[in-house]
Image (cartoon, rainbow, N blue to C red; front, side):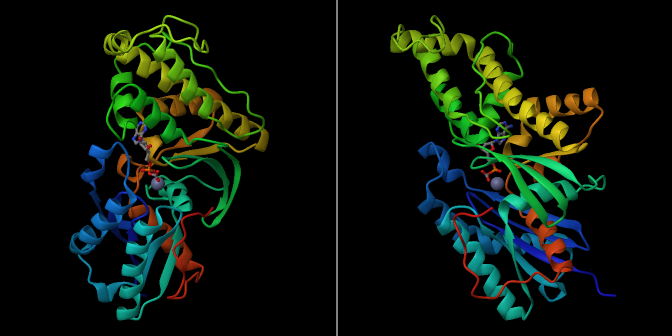
Length: 347
Ligand code: KG4
Ligand code: ZN
């Protein structure tokens, strides 16, 4: 029987990526990162679309070459349909549709958030169903209950900022360049996580909130750590604030990161306990965080739960996860018409 080979394209934000999988095993996963945004302190949608236009052909080309397969060997073309920046999504979507039309192959429309969850099915050691996945990215923070590869339900999510945004906004307040998450992670490794106490929000159920933490960090820094976290009169001058950050960067990063991690894992563990689910996964860009990965594993060991984390390269945006999701959708004959739209929102 012919193998089910899927070529997948991801272009939802600022990474142009292409991957090939064969019967659910990844053969290649290439990512072109767009350096252009760093100077702007965040992703500039117009620049992202233009960079996707430049990158998409060479990225697909190298992913195909690395897989050792030809376009003619593909069973289907998968692409990220939603959610994301609409201009970015359109570039990958139109490219995938053109390929599907030219090759006369079926098109598979993949939801980016579902794909982050299914990144956990890339490794040989896969979670069995049902599992809970904490998906933490720059735009989303969700606890997803997964009873089958394509059967997912959101059981909790953020009511304001995403966990990645909390990292990036904290980093910005500390004067670190975008994207700040990986830098907070780096400095936190050298710091004391118990030095500064940031508040844990009291949000009911399995939902999250990070906007209060952002405000607390803002006030804390404006007071150069001298006053209560919530005190609104700002005691420090600009110079004192900068000096305070410079001298305490590692401890501040470690304390912020530690609070974000406890907010995330307390909710996940409560959901796991209440729903009686013992297979737990994490996914999304923030799951690349070394502190979260460690604390998540430790939680699993302490509670006797099975924990799964995608390989580092499959945590942040990548087409490998789109290819794997495309494979499971292919098995269900879940194809999309060539006029299917790209959507900024979804899931
Ligand atoms: O999933 P992703 O690559 O893109 C979205 O779909 O949003 O996630 C990007 C987010 C950014 O906020 C980035 O700062 C964060 O993931 N991130 C990290 C780390 N690596 C990426 N946050 C904390 N620690 C990291 N090591
Ligand atoms: Zn993502």
